[in-house]
Length: 290
Ligand code: AMP
Ligand code: MN
Ligand code: MN
Ligand code: MN
Image 1: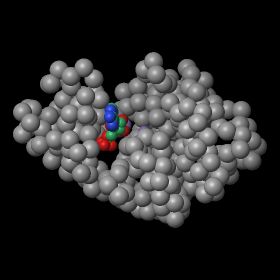
Image 2: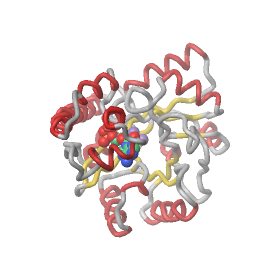
Image 3: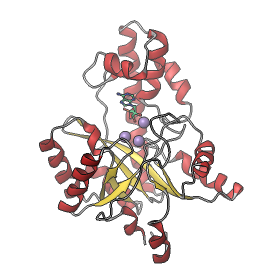
């Protein structure tokens, strides 16, 4: 899909770009309109909304940008949960035709998997002594994608836990008492649907999968074989050494580089666009968009 002229692409270098963010349409804290407002306040020029297994925010955000004449370029995106060798790997689709039927089919399957897992998680949590967690998590998610982040908030309240992390550590994290293995699509299926929808497929936050260097290399090889386009090499939390290692994987496997904050809600640790800078030797993912 032609999105930007070469001149616009060259300009990209000087723009503030954030290619990974969430809204209330999944587990973010802001509505799409509030997210756009915050991006304008933070002087972000290019923002991708990448909610978990949904593109529901895209039309809402675009309408708002038009209405307010906001100085922001919105990239239509999605973050697809996939299953690989017992790990949950997130694949970000960028610059997609968010109404493409292939993507719609993938989203519909993923939403079913989310619903099935949520119901099963609710059952397991009942057996752990919790009451009505599914109903409350569902109410919290509203029309949006139901995620473990919603469950974690309810568990935190009911069990009086000091933070959300504790809900994952005790109940819904991998292998814990109320964990339910989700039925996500494969990496290949996610990449294929993103490509059919004209987008670029980027492996989200490679540093966060809690795997050894050997497994991470295997994952990157598999992603490349699945026709993946790029890696997120720049996240606010990454130190220089991690950025260097990820950049080297990009160069070694001829992958493009993406960067994003993975913004969910305002916090003192991270915000839109903060601490993001594309390394000079990287091939930015947006080079694929002319
Ligand atoms: P799901 O896609 O439904 O499995 O939900 C995963 C979401 O929960 C992630 O995108 C994070 O926003 C959040 N999450 C995952 N693990 C943790 C954790 N250990 N602590 C806090 N939030 C988490
Ligand atoms: Mn999330
Ligand atoms: Mn993710
Ligand atoms: Mn994310």
